[in-house]
Length: 187
Image 1 (cartoon, rainbow, N blue to C red):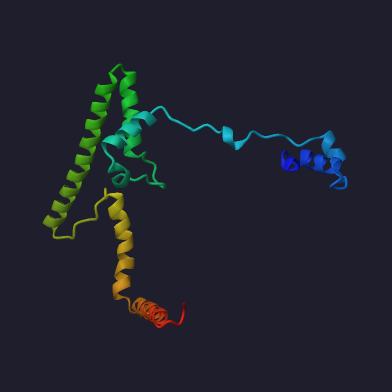
Image 2: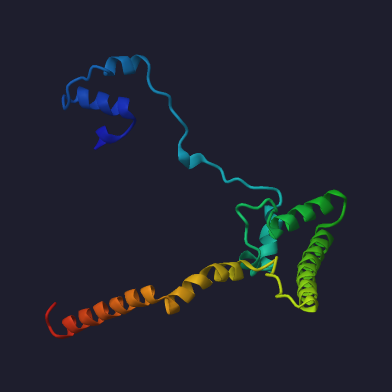
């Protein structure tokens, strides 16, 4: 099927020369001013940043960070892995060796994470002294944020009477279908 290869102009020309199609009115104009040829999508190069090497090393060392320190789409703060990579590059520019730069950035990451936990512990202590409920964690993990969003739906699943009716109806339909199959009615 060689007539199917090429762009619209070459395909139509092949069909007209092979007498498979009458010459369209627009073919002469298209030969005089052929359409622009755009580069193929196969040639798109992958975008890489200078800190990508260190981001990969960060995720190798802290694989749980992908889940705990999720990227906030609507936030302005970069994820900790990017901060780590940028900090290593910054230290390397000042003349520090790569190993030392990674060790310093690693220490800063762990100290920051520890400081966040300690700040929340202090908030809870203050709330307890004041006799109030402890505030929600300002630095929750991504998993806990998702669980907090789903908690309402889980509660509805077990306690909302309307949803309980729907679930009961679904169970009855499933049991009836199983009974129908076992009784030899379907297959």
